[in-house]
Every structure is written in C-alpha cells, then in structure tokens.
Image 1 (tube, rainbow, N blue to C red):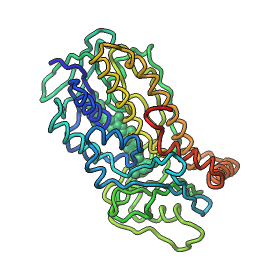
Image 2 (tube, protein in one colour):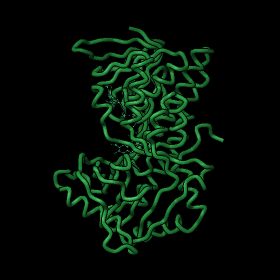
Image 3 (cartoon, rainbow, N blue to C red):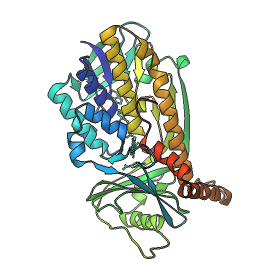
Image 4 (cartoon, protein in one colour):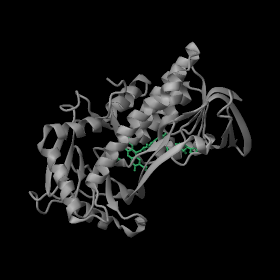
Length: 395
Ligand code: RFL
Ligand code: PHB
C-alpha cells in the first residue's frame, strides 16, 4: 500500500491532521494501535483554546462543540484562603476558552473520518518507521495478525509521548529537553455538579487542587499527590474531604463541595519534554510525540492542534506547488509556540504546587506571585493571554 502521508497514531493530532489533509485534497492513512472505543473513552484534556475551536470549526468538526461546549470567560485562582478571578477576554483581545472534552473531540473527528475521509485503521500497531532520509519512508505495522508495510511520501508521528516514530530520527540528530516534577495528579470524574461555573485553580499548604467539569452534571477534579501514589489508597470519602480542605475560602467556613459517585479515578505523573527538531528528512513529529507539558496550563491538546494546522498547510503547499518552503519552516514555526507553552505550563505548575522540599521562603514567594497576579492588571493580563493561547498566526 502507498499513501502521500502516513499518520502514526489516531489521537487528536493524527485525526485532525487527516481531516485537514482530506479537506486540502491530500490523501493519508491513519494507523492507530488501540481499538476505537478505547481511543474515544480515554479521559484527558478538557480545555480548548480559541485557536483550537476555530481550527475544529474550519475542519467541519464544530457542530457538536458549538452546541454542547461551555465557553468560559474566566478562571478563579484560590490562595491564602481567598479567591481572585482572572478575566480572559478582557485581557486577551476577546479570546476565551471552551470546556469540551478530548473524548468528544476524538469522537467527532473519528465520525468525520469514517464518513468521508481516507483509511483509519484501529488495532494497527506500528513497529518501526524506516527511511526518513530517503524519498520514500516505510511504515511497518501489524494489523489483523499480519505484518504489513505502508510506503509514504511523508510519515507523521502523531503517536504520543511513548510512540515509536521519534526513533526513526537517528539519536545523534535529535535532542530531548525534559523535566520531571516531584508530584503527580490524582484525577477523578464524578457524577456531581461542578463546584462553580468557572474552573478553580487552588494553591494550598496541603497541595494543589483543580476543580474542572465535563458538563453541568459531571465534575472533573484533581488533587496533587506524591509520586508513586496508588489510587486505591484514596477512598472516595478521603478525596472529597481533601478537595473540601484545599478549595476552602476563609470567608465561607463550613463550605463543602456537592458530592456524587466517583466513576473514574487515576494518577498521572507530571512531566515537561521537548524533542528538537520536529522534522528530519521525510519524518515529522506532531503533538505529544514531539512535546509534553504538565497539565496545569491546559496546553497539551491545544499545542497538538496548533502543530497539525501548521503541518497540514505545509503538506498541502508541497502537494500543490512542489515547494518545500513551509515544510522546511515547520519545526521552527511550531517550536516557538511550544516553548512559550512549556514556559507557561512550568510557571503555572511551580507557582501552584507544593514541592515536597519546599521551604517557608519558597511558599512566601509563590504567594507573592499570586498576589501580584491578583493586584496588577498587567500581571493578570500576562496570565490570561497565555491561558487563552497565542493566535495561530503570530502578529
Ligand atoms: P495522544 O492523545 O497520546 O495520541 C497518540 C495516539 O497514538 C497511538 N499510538 C500508536 N498507534 C500506532 N502505533 C504505535 N506504535 C502507537 N503508539 C501510540 C496511541 O494509542 C494514541 O491513540 O497524542 P496527541 O494526539 O498528540 O494528543 C495530545 C493530547 O492527548 C494531550 O496533549 C492532552 O491530553 C494533554 N492534556 C491536556 N491538554 C490540554 O490542552 N488541555 C487540558 O485541559 C489537558 N488536560 C491532558 C489533560 C493530559 C492528561 N493526561 C492523562 C496526560 C489532563 C490529563 C489528565
Ligand atoms: C480538565 O478539565 O481535565 C483540565 C482542565 C484544566 C487543566 C487541566 C485539565 O489545566
């Protein structure tokens, strides 16, 4: 089998890339190792930036997002027992964010690809990508128990942080910059109404907490926990008590969250990583395959979407004009945005979490920074502008 663009991975980046290429008249094949229901149910991101929403709409994947997504114009920071609201559109040229779960984005894109796109193979596990430095790279994969090959003009690795495509770039030609954090998140999905109509990011001496949502009836809540935490050690009651303690405001003594059945519970480590360059010969990397961020800035899915918008345009340009100009610029174009998001995600993470080795001096610095955000329109606007994300076309 041969295709113009072989896409490894059917997560948000692979699916959106396939859709954008289809609309540009460029053929592709998507190979996804998991089955459809696994990919559609994997609980992950919840916040879409304005630019991501615009890209999904332009891809024809905006109908359910517009009907069911929840636009948000602010986030609340809680620290030292008080609350401060960061206004988003007021500080970021009218841009806002949407609560619309990654599971729903994936379902919408899978349905579109199945209805009108090229091949999307589930349970097709890529073993290796070869020939990045030739004119015809090859993907080796297993499907329905058989070894198969797919020759391509280009291969795009959309296969996430643990993917195999990155290794098609010789070790000497790539550099990975990374940081791991000394804490993890315990995340739950609960059949309980959200705490509040906006997201709450809480700094507390007991550790960080985040109150998010999936719908007016379903909450998504996170607690900072030590690395290596076993979710089984956290009963539902213990989780709710801890959320109450970390989200509490001095002005509302005795306040408690509305509780409900916990339907999903998991622990996730926090890591930052960037692999450079994002292109080597005819192999390109996009989304988590090239970079990951700790989730405190809500940037991962949005970076993935931004990468593939830039890449689809470059591949379409190459198909229609034969020019490599935009493909040559792909890595540098994306990395500028990626490093901004890496910085912001690191800033949000280190400002809001309690490092196990943290001194009282460090805590004072965090509180001073949060106080600055709450009292200076400039500091608040800096946070807002980063949170809603940069426009896709840099000014
Ligand atoms: P994905 O989603 O990891 O998809 C990669 C796909 O590749 C497949 N695959 C292979 N297929 C074939 N052969 C192989 N050898 C393969 N190896 C892997 C995998 O099965 C998978 O389907 O990467 P992609 O598409 O780049 O998308 C990235 C996003 O998923 C990720 O950045 C976000 O989920 C990060 N993230 C968040 N991002 C946001 O923008 N806003 C948020 O609010 C947000 N919250 C989060 C998050 C990530 C979280 N976790 C679990 C890491 C919250 C959490 C809890
Ligand atoms: C989520 O709703 O899952 C979510 C929201 C904001 C974040 C991270 C995750 O920063």
